[in-house]
Image 1 (cartoon, rainbow, N blue to C red):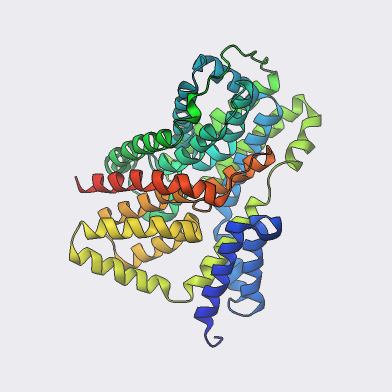
Image 2: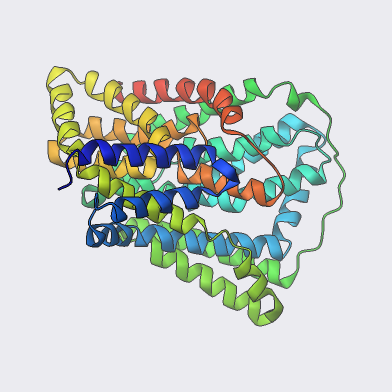
Amino acid sequence: MIPYSGPLIWAVATATTVGVITRPFRLPEAFWAVGGALLLCVTGLLAVPDALAAVARGYDVYLFLGGMMLASELARKTGLFDHVAALAVRQARGSARRLFALVYGFGALVTVFMSNDATAVVLTPAVLAATRAARVRQPLPYLYGCAFIANAASFVLPISNPANLVIFGERMPTLTGWLARFTLPSLVAIAATFAALYWTQRRALAEPIAADVPVPPLSAEARLTAVGIVAMGIVLLIASLLGADLGWPTCLAGLATLLLVCARRPGLCLPALREISWGVLPLVAGLFVLVAGLEQTGLIAKLAHLVQALAQRSPAASVWLPGGTVAVVSNIVNNLPAGLFAASALAASHASAQATSAVLIGIDLGPNLSVTGSLATLLWLTALRREGQRVGALQFLRIGALVMPLALVPALASLLI
């Protein structure tokens, strides 16, 4: 072991996190995450076999994201997004507030049944198309709706967020047990997030929008893509009920949709594959390696001891402190690595169901504070950049600093009822 390896690992992890957040020299997030992981290996702070094992731990997440990104790109290429967007604008009937509510409600459904990453990847381009069709001058309120509901609704079902599977692992409760624990906190989080976000955007939502917009025809390829996305959601729900991994079903559903669509329109295949944001996958892999490095600093043992101490103090303390702490930490190291740490600490401490539930709510809802809080928000940023939209870290933080706490506090409080 290298002398002072613990502080050095923390230094690398901190520098990497800063790089992912600020993107110096406009280099993508994946560059900094992979760079940090390689630095740990090159300096001997983390053995190469351990780094490779850490990368392998994320295989289910890579497959899951790959399938989702395939579906999203096909929906964009075939015009499915444009069609759905025009229908949403017509349904809004000239009301920006109604369009905002429609976006938020549809985002909640996509998150619940297809995961928060799907909301970021699949819904964001559709919402941007809707704002263009409605000739909206300020599209950010609707785009914020996609980002915030992706996290706020991400613990309605186990499949609503891959982090849920990380937290519970083999201790995953039955679906009925899950609903008994999280239905009330989820409803509270969704409603509170909507109210707080609407309040921050109320002035922008006062503008008139177009009501009668042309609805582009739905091509056969777009219909096939829609069927594929619906089938993917059904497959995910079945996999969740069976307790199976979500990666392979999602990836296979995405590939099957690609093959069906490209069988009718072969020229679509290569452009669709080429324009997918593949850089998300090395970003996630780099984060897994950083987690493996931080595990060597003894952090998990300290966290387990803390959880045990809180449980002995009072039930309320075992809810407020773990839930609030992981909510903040998720924005420093991203909620996927934070979830891995928390899961290990919870297992080591034999934490109560209440403490575990509080940690899961913090992991899922806490990332609404910053753009680096969750993978879903990073995917949302990537989708925006592809469409020429920019949202800065401080710009998002100003909204998240109000919206996240106003949802987190009542959601955690509902666990004590």
